[in-house]
Amino acid sequence: MDLSLNGYSFRRQSSMTLIELLVVVAIIAILVSIASVNLLEAQIRARVARVRADLKVLGDALEHYRVDYPNYPKSIYAELDEKRIELGIFASLPSLTTPVAYLSSLPKDPFLGSNYQYFSAIILPGRITSFQEKYGDWVLFSVGPDKDINFNAFTGVLIPYDPTNGTISEGDIIRGQREPGQ
Image (cartoon, rainbow, N blue to C red; front, side, top):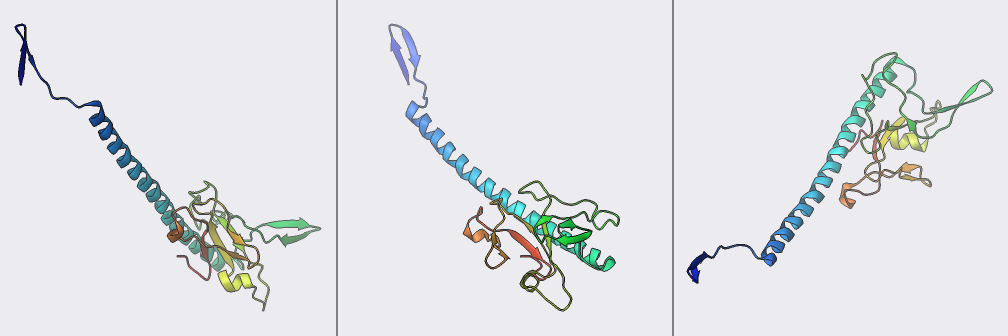
């Protein structure tokens, strides 16, 4: 459409009004927020899958270690008057890379950036503890997306991670000798 005023002709250009521009920006912001939430959840699901694969590899390395040695690697010891006493607490997994390379390197927990947690049971001949009934002679675990050890002190059982309670829910990703993972 052409307009003329005092001999000058003006052509009307179609452009967006401020309200139309704000609506477009709001729609883009909503789409970006939806995409970022989905991206964060996908990253957590990928980390959980990586942890489960790492725990399987570590469990296999522990079983290979056991073939060569009489026991599984111990968690943590304290020295008391020439006696080594197992403290029975969770610890970083001891190296399975030397002297025999069961693994070329220890994988790191993607939720903490440190080694996975490891616990070996105190093995007494002819006696099986409740820990051994549940997990076997060892358990490996990651703290999971909540980045906290979830341990029921009354039952002595780790609380397993369940993504159906929300992507970042309480619980640890566990692999014991008796339960090969989830």
